[in-house]
Length: 200
Image 1: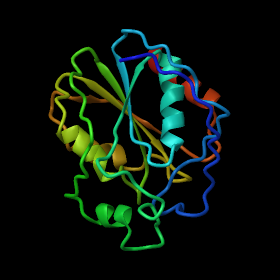
Image 2: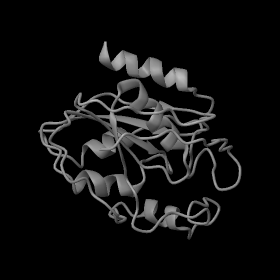
Image 3: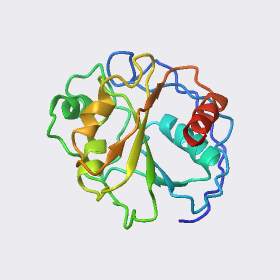
Image 4: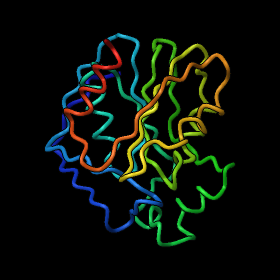
């Protein structure tokens, strides 16, 4: 994968508009710019889904601390603000989360994950669980023999049972480590310290 060049982006995603603590949620991670990521061939891959940019900031912070490569789960049909509106019971996100069998399409599946031993899986918490597109990724990718570490963002609920739900979708050869859920107010430094705890 190519070197990822830092781009300036203000991420001030407050709890208003389309998000609420107990519905479709996303933590606020404010970063003046995304860190520059110089990936090394070290067996780590950061996989993230970020419809509102918060998880993108978290993923870049993790990848920067690990010198890991990045892969973005991009939906075939991008999510709009209306799609993420928890107040609308018929919005796309709410409809998907009511259906445990929903599997939104991914525009570009990874070609080859064989160089990676450990995957940091970043996702927002939607209604207490990971978005259904994360299930699409897990079920559509050969993850045999790999270690997955979940990393979830939410306003207040933490990772909840989302990691256990996802673990049930993978085979016995996939090893899951205890994940973490970050809440509103988490900083880039907090993420760096968590990453250090993984590799020491």
